[in-house]
Length: 182
Image (cartoon, rainbow, N blue to C red; front, top):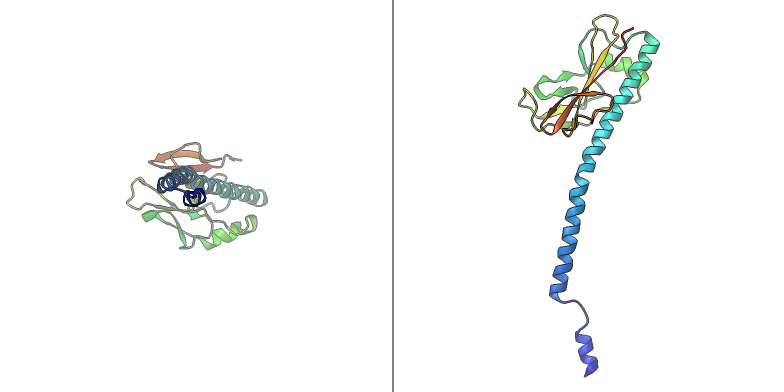
């Protein structure tokens, strides 16, 4: 008789199983919420790293040629954009093959910054920003240039070498300006 009762009492009750499932659910929710920001940080790190690669490439170009690429003050896409344009929605900047060919020897593969869907873009109904843009600031023999891009998050310290020029709701507009005037 004692042996039969022992067999029937082995295992977990329904209440114990429900408590264990609830604990596992709470723990998995905490893990998912805490890892949500890591994707944003990883993409921001990639953006800063790619901008720094372009800055290095432009400095190498200047050392070889005496000035930065293209003195026309036009704005160009940095990298090979899949759709051939970059920038903010309805103000897209077209990719320029000759410009890209000019800097290809100085940077491997013409990397493209990850796209970013902006929460509240300024003066535009479009909500996407593609890649980064380059513009020579001086009109003859380019001695100064700008690179513009967006970062996820409103933190003005996200831009790395660039200085943040505005924060749009949940995103930051970054602008790097070269400081060489010689």
